Image 1 (cartoon, rainbow, N blue to C red):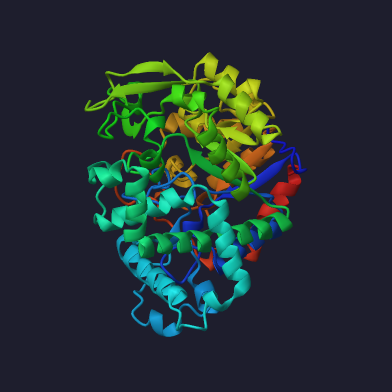
Image 2: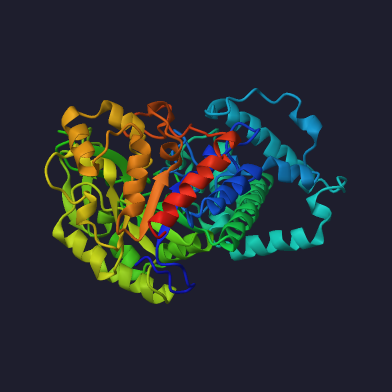
Length: 509
């Protein structure tokens, strides 16, 4: 349920969905620097108490936060470079060849080259015994670094995995030589010695991310703002977790999946969706008492206050497609551990689960029963309420309190873009439902979200700013151009804070 019992929280929430990559920053992408703190101040000044992010992981090909290299490691691209200047690991001279950035769009190709170069330069200075002005001379920081490495049980696997990818020029792990693809203890030690410097670099950047993120979280919590994190249920095949725990996934002896994730054909797709993620070997997870999963969820709750789990229905049943199929048609439903898993998770956490179930799409009774048994809130999307001309569960008069209302999500068009493209029947239903001319459609929907009985109301920043489709964050099924939208510091003005404040106050949030 929404009440996180290990720390008292207010019962009703209102907030904004904005991934850190979207924040204002002079370095080509939003980061954990001044723009992040300014955004938290904006939330506080607006009377809001919730900030939702997308998965915070280290992204790979396609830049999707839902296909990270690790279920634990943070995104190096949002490390604040100004902090490295303060540590004297970078200087202004290091930025003389910085590209000119588009303030509202991320150019990942240019960005990755630029930022990785600076992060590696900072690490070189950090490890240089003759470089005495930086972080390495700070005993407190060095002790914190050592403590972080000791306490992060996932770090050694992640850093060796990433160093191995670099050594193989980005080649996926299942194409490596056997001595690293599935190393013995002795072989692993040999590789760790061979790649020691590269491993140290990844340890270092994860320490920077963790330090900066925890400072951000502390700042938000001090202002009575809770953070909602996000966890994709499935992992990328080419990830540190799959490589280092091959026995926990449905893989053959060569590291290739025997079956992969997807969803079956439905109204939206005649061939279903073939995601390609390797599926969990749930019998192995059950035999370990879900040790890996419990570690994963516990770690996420050190980073955030609540956690949305993507594709929640996969804990009840999942669509298994034989590896090599070109579509998702020839799959079958298979059972997942469901109640047993969440019972053990709750017992290990020691408090009610502050988890939001992403229960969108085709949901059957057993998924609803699983969600409700643990009192987990589901998601209600206002755009969906009017795409269907008939009575439906997404209309606000059908909500229960224990749910989260969104105008739209990261996978939707912006509200303005959606409305501009909507069928006239949908527009007519919306106008009649809210008794409005829809001339200010974004705020019609924001007010509807905030005024609903839902315990949580979350609005994407694009809707707060009344932006159309150019600001859409992700278009599912489209491989390029996603995850790139940003906003500017000037967008967070006093008038907008006042309007949000009055709206939240008016509806008791």
